[in-house]
Amino acid sequence: MPISTSTIHTLTVNPLPSPAKFGVEVSGCDLNNLGEDQFKELEELIYTHRVVVLKGQKDLLPASQQALGIRFDPETPAELGHMEDVRGVDTALGKAKLEPKPTLPGGWLININGSGSFEAGHLDIDHPFKLEGLGHRGFHRDELPRDETDAGFVRFQRWHIDAPFYKNWPARITQIWAHTMPSGDDVTVRWDDGSNLSVKSRPGRTAFIDCVALYNSLTSEQKAWVDNSLIEYAPNQWLTGAKAMGNGLAMFTEGKEKGTDNLVNADPAFAQTIPLVWLNPVTGEKALQAHAIIAYKLHHRSSPDSAFKVIDDLGTVRKMLDE
Image 1 (cartoon, rainbow, N blue to C red):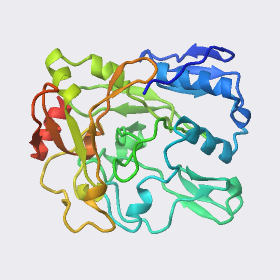
Image 2 (cartoon, helix red, strand yellow; image 1 turned 45 degrees about the horizontal axis):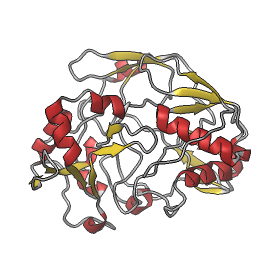
Image 3 (cartoon, rainbow, N blue to C red; image 1 turned 135 degrees about the horizontal axis):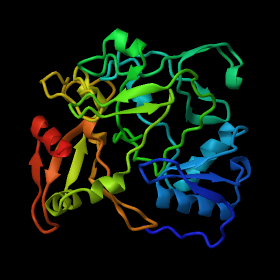
């Protein structure tokens, strides 16, 4: 459904200094006191530029951050994602965690990510808590040697969409508030997929893929089938035992997946089957939106008039998405 755009422009907007050629840096608003005109302007910027970095938000309140996310999609119930459904259950990302991640007072939908031990009172949380940072160890099949990580070489842990594709529909936007950034020397992020690609980065950064550019890079034949096909997901526990490739984009197919039988606290009926291509409600652009790591099946066709062919061989599904 198209979204109405703003006729008032009060924000300062500059392109991000990146060779990726998408994303902007924005200043001139206070998210704790965001009026409707500036919200509509911000909404248009997000759909137009896909990544928006908002400066000057060090005093952002948890309630304001939560309210902002709901504002983008007010008709959808505000619920937590899938992580509480797998509390106490092993997943592909690691062993079971029994304690829920702390959430911020005033913003119960907001999860805290990071690493370290924190005393009660930190961020106004009333109990001590510990956060474990995510790395590639335990999830990638072929791990970097310790001497290489000690020398500053790292990998993308995993590329993903912030959605479980189970029970709750994907949110319209993802928000990250950078409260405290890690310090230290730059790291070298390696793809480790045979391409010899690498990039220097400050530690603790988040990378984004331009899924519009990804769609535009496809051949006409590839666009025909992704335009008309669906991707089916499954409760994420089914991946337990499988391992990722070195670039964090795809999984090895070695028959180590747990499968969908006898999952704990999971109902396959909640798993979602959705389009591979999403239409931007402001620009009309198409984006290839496939969470390849957790893909389960493809409902394949190359025209809107043809019948779907269900592809359920996991190796074939992953190969088609990878190519």
